[in-house]
Amino acid sequence: MSVETSPAAQKKLKSFEKRKAAERREDLRHIMSDPRGRRFMYRQIFIDGCLQDVYLTADSGIYRHEGKREQAAKLMDEVQRTFPDEYVLMITERLRDQGTEQVAQAEAKDTAADDEDAR
Image (cartoon, rainbow, N blue to C red; front, side):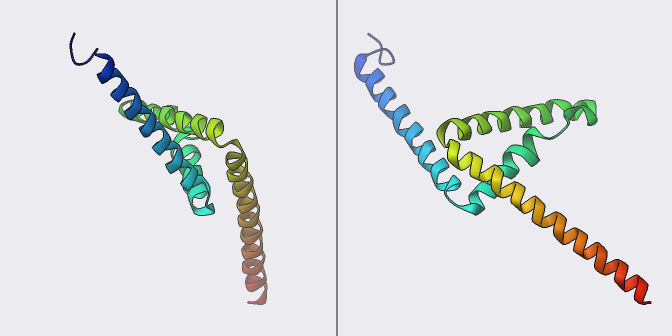
């Protein structure tokens, strides 16, 4: 019997894989438990990954961008399955932040217009 297929080796491998999976879940839990972590995760999934349009890049870049999208999709799936409430919170926070950004941009535009009128 080889070492790779021995019951003892298989048991150790299975135990190692379980520990690594638990460690990954705990790492993800830590990231998703904080607003800063959720902002980071949002950028990884949506801004740097899934929402990029790969067909607008040069031919040599399509494969790289498609790979990034695939990784982002896997990450999004893992977050949705493992921490669905935190995923929804992440999206909610981003929508709220986008609304705040739009208000700030509108106010800046109004201020700039008022400044122009005052001249």
